[in-house]
Image 1 (cartoon, rainbow, N blue to C red):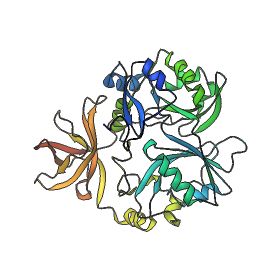
Image 2 (tube, helix red, strand yellow):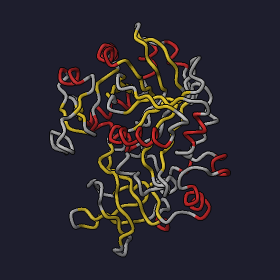
Image 3 (tube, rainbow, N blue to C red):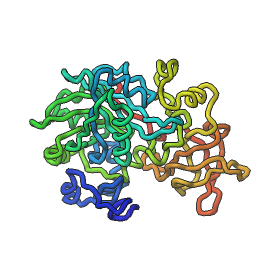
Image 4 (cartoon, rainbow, N blue to C red):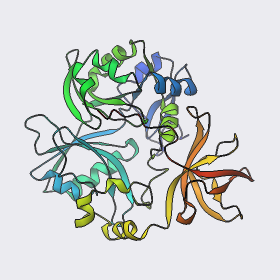
Length: 379
């Protein structure tokens, strides 16, 4: 963990829900420059299982929220990402990645075209906490004169995830239940204006809710009062996204990893593949055609010992072929699970490999992702 002052000896920031976390008995840790709850008295394992079976509430207010506006804003942002943003209909959300000139990933983010009137030339952005300052600076500088960026520093963000999430949220916002996956709308939560996104990062159905910071504790307490809902910390959030095969920026994707190598080729729209015009397009389009030299894969340890990030992956002859980027225990599958990069010739599902854990070569095999099935709302 980082020191209590953060990575640069600067004081930790606090989300608007800091007092709520403390009142709930949360264990707080430094994360991305913020004081964040890693777990509550329920414990990481039970928090994980509760989210998979009922509904978990997460504070993700450390994430960066902002609006990008201007005539042709979708075309402008397409100069920085490989997603087809022009095809976004009002209310639709798209997951995409910011790229550097070499095709490496600067961050992954959600881009929404708001549905409400007067927002026709606006895109709503949600970016990762650890990257938000550089992301927004990068976007503002690259699109200067083409689009204006406004950060929403006064907005909190909650995520309610799990099979009961829709039922719970519909008690307060009836229209939430009929929202398709990866869509957004504005509404009110007992008089509080909110922006809903039917999305999340656990593999479960659920929502992210943008709320004025001053009203966030009020909304959170209302949701936590519902019998199906428990507060969930960063520990379970990490194990949930790992089981779902979802990347953590800085671990599984970074500035020297392309979308093709990361198994994220699906973010590159068909039109974008034909036209190019995004950073690193020559390299990425070449990898799409000829293949990449490395590939992100699931790794299933065959024993009980988990393999953590930076564990060396070897072939059965003892040659290094890659490295684990995320690993731990998967409560839903009752076994250790991991992801990492291997030389592409070893990427086939079922390939036998060894993991070097504390000097021992432990057997494992390349596994199909995700480890736990995605259960997004597809209606």
